[in-house]
Length: 164
Image 1 (cartoon, rainbow, N blue to C red):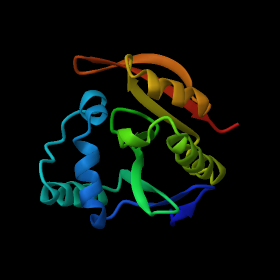
Image 2 (tube, one colour):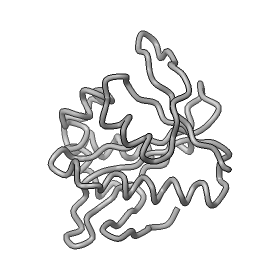
Image 3 (tube, rainbow, N blue to C red):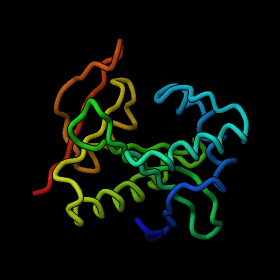
């Protein structure tokens, strides 16, 4: 997907030039609590992490930035995991930009593009039960709860949205 714009955001595919932002995001409290430690402890680690994502054809990551300042503040992900039939949409953002509607704006834009282009018949999302902010956002985006799935020892809530 080519770079996109919304009312307040620029959205573009993840690139190695985003390393300092990715380093900050992956070490934020919310990422570590709800997504997990990815062992990205330097900008060099962040570059390697980004290169791994870019080389994986089952992963798409977009960085969203505030238009006025071009400041990167969050990501939208689409990952086709082997143990799920449909691709999984996800999101994360820097804590200082939370509760301003940016993640909804970026996620809604990407989700609408994916559904409009009929790239997929269904898109899922998974989250921990105690990730209340993500659950609220998934529901606001139109995804509905389907079931609880096990991922190792963790129980995850699975949401989905289908083409009408």
